[in-house]
Length: 336
Image (tube, rainbow, N blue to C red):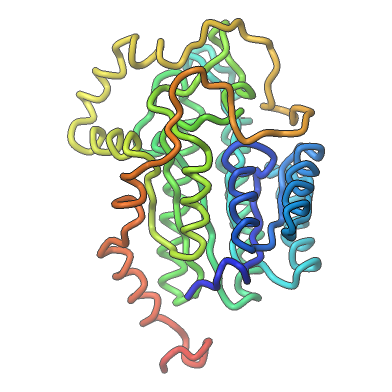
């Protein structure tokens, strides 16, 4: 049983901007204590300042998720400062846009090192802390592109596919051992965050999220919901569900649709020349922000996510039952 949000200590890795920043603010608004981590120290300081000014509790811990020692240190700081960790959220990600043959080996390596191995480091740091706390939740932000890849985003899509596999394995292994630790994977559609301005572009222009585009707060609210109501996977936005459904019903037809330049390429290009600035190898200095600069319509809510995406499925209940049956005698009142 998850603790009330007002009693939770939450670590968010990737809290400097976009979804992670929106998540930190949303958790704090509901009374949680928030440990904010990312590479950008200035951006972390501003989000922590905003939380504290509103009467919340938060601390900034500059952390490079690609460095396993730094991530373990992050967990140590959270426990030392607040006594425990109840929820760990892995959000941090970087991206490179371009054709597969134009993206270098080093760029593929860096994206996977941050987007996939960074989450592995987070899991390795979180598990011992969650066990010491008597249980808790790990929330990993993958993407609808973890189900269906989109042209020009091969490293990013590959990392998001890998994340679904990571969290699926972890979820089953924890249930096998009867551990009171739940794992939720969040699968957002396109979101209006600074991620796109911060991505590296090999297209000669800056990139943008393909429509329909959702506000970061829609994803943040889902993450907060999952911390109190764990689910196996939660797609965020009807567009995410549609992409996933298309992949399930006819992957070949989805290939064909995304091969049409209007859908697969043009929808991701802006008319702004690339400025040559990105956060692939180092953080971008600045105060950080939640929203990006998407020029089109941004959807502020998702009825699909609220009405259907968050609903518990039979498999969720079955896994919970398996976890209960595998609980060791005497562990937190578990049956013999």
